[in-house]
Image (cartoon, rainbow, N blue to C red):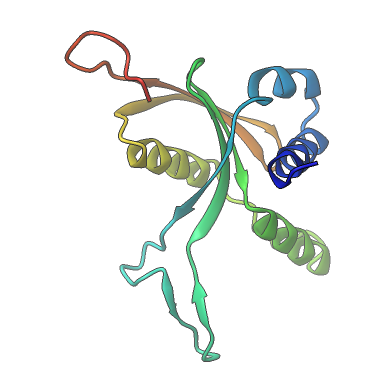
Amino acid sequence: MTLKALTVVAAVTLITACTPNIKYVADTYKDIPRTVYKVPPNDGLPAVRELPSGKIADVSKAYIIFDNTSVGKLMILPSEQDIASAGVVRGYTFGAVDLIPTEDAFREAASGYLRSSGRQCEIISIREMDEPVHEISYSCSTIDTGQPSPL
């Protein structure tokens, strides 16, 4: 099995394990490539920086996105690292601290991703499929030819 095939299997497994509607996810996103989109920090500083410990790190938040442009929907979830970190912190604090992004954070990440792909889109709706997986419906404006944008 190729690395690409393994990545797709792993991503679908992760998502379907977190999502109750497995058939819907498989039907809607099975042939959609995985994209990693990074949201830079909002403090005005570079994303890659030296931490107080002296380590150099990327402090942007990464999201995994499956963008089905043919239906105007994308599935978005935090990176595997962020999901694991949130689980560990939630466990150690007995649920008192929750690091899973808010709905507003998912909306902001999806909007940034759509803008970064050169599209002018409006988010129509967002729904939590199962924590931390969200699905976002969007509509993009048409280009001057009157045809829908190819992206």
